[in-house]
Figure 1 (cartoon, protein in one colour):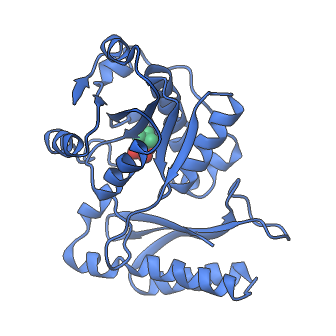
Figure 2 (cartoon, helix red, strand yellow):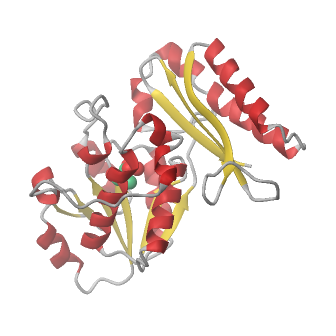
Length: 274
Ligand code: PAF
């Protein structure tokens, strides 16, 4: 696996490559990321991963400084996953001057995750567009676990006419249903055994809706009450349209149920398609 941190070196290494599939990450790789790498391989000839903890997408009180950085172990995993090339820029490589031009996603960036993390999706969209311009992939793979991120990046790519196919990678779960996440490492043993409740609750909502329950607000409220009565602090449980994450109108648009809740210090997010 080649590793490059400088943009000109990466561009040079990628000249004359066939179909490039790109998997951007912030490192601290787990099986969820590795399954994205496996899916990436199905879509092209050269698989490029990136590792960059992007300061722009962290709020002032978030865990940017503490975010787990495990570069050597990540490289080992990427080699085992047979990745061709790793782009691992430093902050000076990616932001050699103060970033003043941003991608500003529409109103949905201020709802759900964006309501709790103002500016987060602006930071994500900006760095992803920049990474796209550097790597110039034909395909890019993002996990469905960050559903809102996937939706915003898909719509950004379409609206800005970027010649890139966006692929949503399935969420990988532990045997008890907990979605794998770098932040699960912050859970204490007792929080870890409580954590699968989130997935059980989302699955219950899915079954209720499929069985014909249309009282979404009641389902969302009941889920929040159940989580909070077990020590969680819930930011949202929301049933939304898959395409744009708007509140569902009458009709049969495909739905997704999303949730974010804090269990002790870690904040867990999850979603399932209905
Ligand atoms: O999902 C992530 O890890 C990050 O938001 C991404 C897409 C790599 C941008 O920094």
